[in-house]
Length: 384
Picture 1: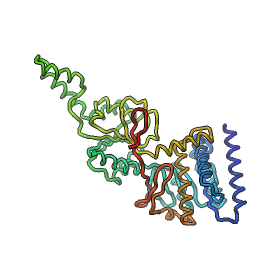
Picture 2: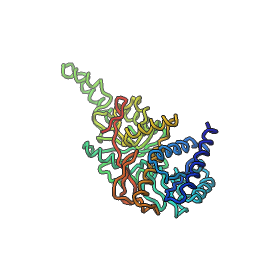
Picture 3: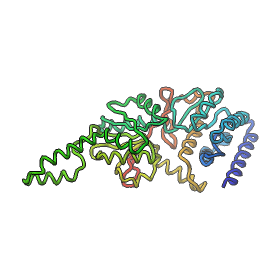
């Protein structure tokens, strides 16, 4: 498979180079691609390259040329070498890099525009524009959805890790009202205690025990009936919030959801929400909650892309590949509209731009996205 991919990449490079010579006298848009074609994340790099091939086929403009180069997997020396090679080919705009460490490195190329599929920072930073599904875009969609459903007492749970500060800053920028934030530990034993405290579990359990004591010596029909009802409960009394947002992913998210249910937080009383999970079907089989809401890209578009990619390349793409697909579409749109791209200022657009992942818009020096809200219920993703 590695030999096949190296041959494929070589063919792509030769093809793009030949096109460069063939259209030397025409106005062209040359776009570099920085992706990890070697190292631990080579599969991601391959997926991104394939997705750009799909985008090229759809755009169908011979004057759009991609110049792919290997950024390595955390190899700064290789990253710089590849950037210089792309610049020598005449490209002034590059798709990539993917991570924050590389962001710091590419800032020194001040005359080059980098369009990153990363979701870390929506703010246009000097020569870098990130178009990923950033947290701020997600929170805007979540806030609208909570307001629409009259949920105004929200508890926000987020992990104590390297992204804690980013999460806190994003909430301040979006302007949530009447919400409480709690940072939790990744240690399951500590997590359980923290959730019990947040949900006032001990007091609600004590309320039930006290109520049952009042009835245990009574033998009238009403008391006996009430006692049977109480025997079906684990706690007595509601929590002091109407919605809960867990800012986490995968198994860590599932652990938090399980702890909430163990603490007897009922779905009839509380709306459960999280952030984009990329339509992870493992939540279909999660028994802790029957209904979970989160913001994401358009599911129909996502499915169409996945099916087309699978049909052409007989494999499944990484999530970041669909973002790279939209990155090329966005670059091409700006180029066709302005007839040129000279700096990140050319991406300050008034109109909303529709892509595969969502609808892009520019606000307060940031590129954000309009996202849909989906409910995971009965093994389906239901658009709200």
